[in-house]
Image (cartoon, rainbow, N blue to C red):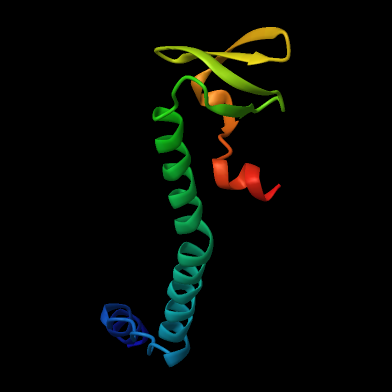
Length: 111
């Protein structure tokens, strides 16, 4: 008789655990934290990078640039992805993506 009872208990489906309301609240909290991080950190950084990339592609002869190494100079020649920069009495060839900043005329006046 005991084997009959043990077989009946084995055939029963296990009871589904009830979902606690805390698990859905945790999911909402995680989504809210991700949204805050996206809108206050990731999105502004992407906009800033896009603006910088546009300014570097519109680079022209005579613009003042600051390289990633901190060299300040004037653009003398542009060829594909290489930019020749004159700083003092020296000329330096710099990769276009290594230009860190292109100060605008408004920034120079205020400084």
